[in-house]
Length: 521
Ligand SMILES: Nc1ncnc2c1ncn2[C@@H]1O[C@H](COP(=O)(O)OP(=O)(O)OP(=O)(O)O)[C@@H](O)[C@H]1O
Image 1 (cartoon, rainbow, N blue to C red):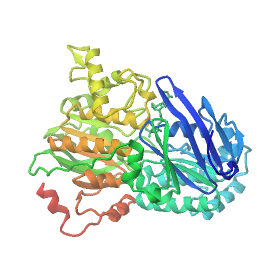
Image 2: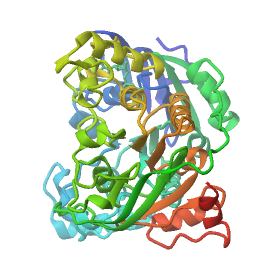
Image 3: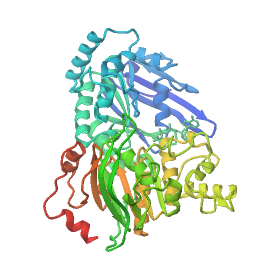
């Protein structure tokens, strides 16, 4: 039981001794959590620390094995999301659950318990949107909206249920820096009106800017509760990991290396009604170089990755060249044979087969390197390769036989990145390399990318995280509306200018710096 001195009724939500065990791990081990009305409370921890499990318990998606939940001082059982909503708990998921072909109002109506009239609902949506600075038009179709706008719809949908607690799971991973600022203004206002917020994120600087308090989890247990405003990102990371964080080591750039990946005048119409057509994409990456591609998701990143990996083949073979060889017409397997590896953004459906063990997931892409011998699968080979990935990238799991789908999001990401990097590709194209991974693991992944670059690989990193691109990319280009800007050197790139280009504007840099760097390489 809690030893809190405060009367329980002071808290909006209080968890006592929450436990949830899975066959190979205790995901939540005696977790205590207290959130006051109007408080913005962060839940942080390494990958696999138990954050998502805890949120799913609060939202009624997972039943705890033991422990008590108090809601406004009263003991409650939350057996389903409907129970949670009835109590006044709302959740905004990382992956939006909106129907593209319906309007904002129609989507929100679907979530309402008793079917409201659309005109009355539209008025409520507009009023709520105005009150919290979330401009959305109830009549617009979802497919016409940017990711940031869709997130506003999700937030308004949750707010229309008048929640007393709002759970947000990594809400800023899809937003431009400007949109993050706007979101924070909204969240502060929601909290000022008395709604509590539980905020899950790996971005410690954002937590410091936004949150009043933080509960830190490690290995399913609470290791501390702190005021993030009194901490530094380094001291919070220490509470999360028990260690000091290493810094990413940069090495000297190699100059004059040959171009290993070239794309010239790539046009790729999409047959997906909600996809993005690529128009006149040009890029080139030398050995020993990382090209960063910034952009808000949904602007052609998935299509560009498909074109580069070979998932989408082209009629013009010369449009894409690897080490000078035309590959536009080749499928992924044949491009892999030429030394190209790729990591898609969607790790659960494209990057892995969740129901298969990690060892068999190795075979999806790494079918050389001792995994297949004389046309036969070497199970010893694939298991050894999976073990190497697990060890090198500190993948927390029960071993090579663990099902991919049982890993926490960040641990699966580490495994997939490791699987590609350990194949020593000459050209690597990776989308969102540190999406959902904790600060310590992000450093390991970024370091591995830099080390691969220093061994002479040409690397394209597609990322929505500007901080990441500024840390590891040698040059940065921006993709918006299916077009790619010219790449500018990291030194010449300016965060605001990139943010503007991400929203569809021109990428402007200080004169004289752009080309010099590119040519100096
Ligand atoms: N359905 C499941 N079956 C088996 N194990 C699970 C299941 N769901 C979660 N786990 C395990 O429980 C632990 C906690 O996972 P959880 O997803 O809560 O972590 P997390 O802190 O949210 O991680 P991340 O930051 O990577 O999302 C992990 O070891 C994970 O592998």
